[in-house]
Structures are given as C-alpha cells and as structure tokens.
Image (tube, rainbow, N blue to C red; front, side, top):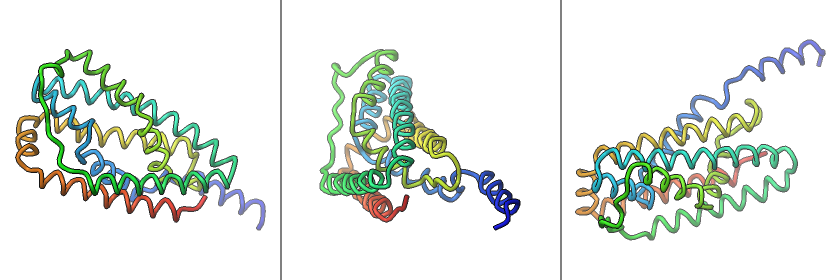
Length: 225
C-alpha cells in the first residue's frame, strides 16, 4: 500500500468516534437494568429515603457514585496496560470475567425477595450518609471485579485509546446509577410500599438481571483482543 494512502487510512481511523453510538446506547440500557435490580446499594438508598427523606437518599447516591469513580479509574488504567502487554493475560481475564458473570447470574436467579428494614439505627445525617456511600462502594472488591468483567466488552481498541473508552463507559455507568438511584430516592415512599407488597416483582427483577448477566458472559467469552 502506498505510504500516502496508508497515512490517510490511519488518519480516518483515528477520527472515529469511540465507541460507536450503538454500543454506548446498549451499554447505557444494560447499566440501567443492572442498577434497577434489587441489591444492597439501592435498597440502602430506598431505606434511608424512607426514613430521612429524599435528601438522605440523594446523599447516599452521590457517595456510591463517588466510589464508582475510584473503581472506574483503577480498572481503566489497569486494563489498558494489561491488554497491551499480553494476549494470554487478556484471554485469562476474559474467561474469568465470563465465569464471574455466570456466577452472578446464578445468584440473581435463585435470590429470594429481600425484606426492607427501616430501623432507627440506620438514621444518619447527610454527610455521614455520603461518606458511608463512598466506603460501601470502594471497600467492596466485587465492584472492581464486576467492572473488570463488564466494561471491556464495550470497548474497541480500533476506535481509540482504550483507557479513554473505559473512562467514558464508567462515566456512563455512573450516570445510569445516578438516574436510577436518584429516582428511587425521590419515589422512596411509593417504591418501598410496592416492593414490600410485591415479592413477585423482586423475583422478576432478579431474573431479568440474571438474563442480562448470562448475555454479558457469552458476549465476553466470544470477544477478541
């Protein structure tokens, strides 16, 4: 290939958006579904909102999302170096990630409905709730493992720097979390009564989450470096 044509093709490739809009939309929808699934984080937001009002739930939400910034940065920097260094390491990480997602799918599928407890011991002020949200997130190694398994599937090295793509995906995940958890905080009374009276709804959400995890696991297992 002539040098000039090769340079032109490289320039076109470097100007591609990262990642594709369709990929970002799929990732955003998956993130919304995962944030909606009943779990300790969104149930804690729900509990504190019911006890202390909307501002308490929003404080927890901001704390949890601040913690996600730490995980996103760590995963983005670490994965970029790993992918560039070793095809074998990428394959092992891919298979471990797929296995972890399948385990999450099994846990979600067999999960029973969760009771929502609201006790006086859970009552904290806004700053304490914000700090608790941060600590709950950054001290949970499962979040980093989940990001290691989840984010790389939507990144494409041919569309730009991998680190920047992973940071962008992490930011989108945080936006989805803010939207869902913020909505829970604003509608705490209605949602609390609904979930308390509807264990069947919780089972449906858990099984929808399990289906999403299975799909992500197969997508990850079939991905290429």
